[in-house]
Amino acid sequence: MTISIAPLRSLSLLTLAILACTFSASAAPANASTEAQTRYRQDMAVCNSGQSNQDRATCRREAGSALAEARRGALNDAPGQYQLNALQRCSVHKGAERSACEARMSATGSVEGSVEAGGILRQSVTITPAQ
Image 1 (cartoon, rainbow, N blue to C red):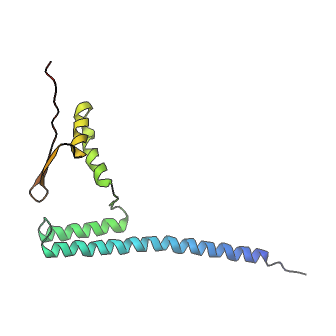
Image 2: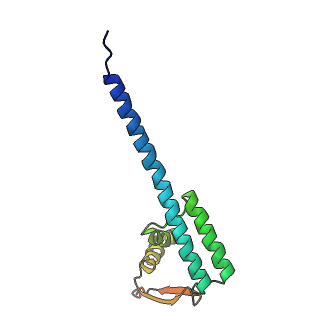
Image 3: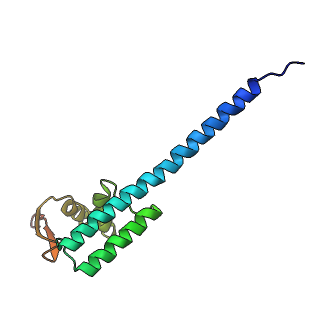
């Protein structure tokens, strides 16, 4: 009677593949958690230095909330997300008003002010011929 080791070899390779996938899947959340913790420490440093545009209690609360959202995977810091959010604000307008809003959000025209000063004023001028 001979015993073939081919099935054992296949089973071993399958087990190794499953373990490798499990390890790589568990490494990703750990890396995200580390990045979130690093970002939280940076945010807290800004809060404690007084360089944020908020009082310290609000700044710390916001930093903690951002950390909690990042741990849940709900914090979206993707590049371009800011621009998408800005353009979504224009969705309430229709036609020419929407086009003008999108032009303002895309920095066409003049931009004045800052968040620190209390707001950003975006202005664009559209010349309409007399009828």
